[in-house]
Image (cartoon, rainbow, N blue to C red; front, side, top):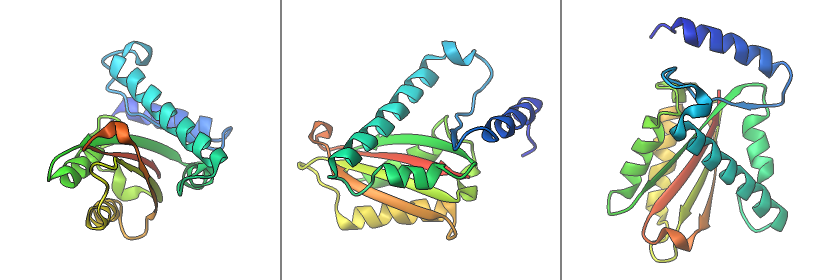
Length: 174
């Protein structure tokens, strides 16, 4: 797929910004609505910041297997990064959640195959805790989508407000 002029300009700006920062999270825009007026984009940014803040807070408390050092490992490479969040329940929750991760409007279509590093934070509740085969299915799907060369870091936490749902936060750098 050939990039549009908007993508070319945007990519040029990304390179300019990357020269001055440690990392950058990129959310693709449709161009139909200015970013500051797009409620879905603002909600995605808020959700991303909420996840990153929670990871930092949990790292400070020392009680989680994905911490801020893992976040830095993924995004501190002078490469663009993207995020996605998916939630599903039911017997097919793993298939649904992995499909949602890569069909998010905030993931560039087809870009997952270029991911150098991926961080997954998987949340489930004590009522429907993540099973080992579900974990394997999720990480296998991520590895397949991103390629065998991608470094995948994952963690799991219990979040009882999820009831029977499974929620996955994905952070990828390219």
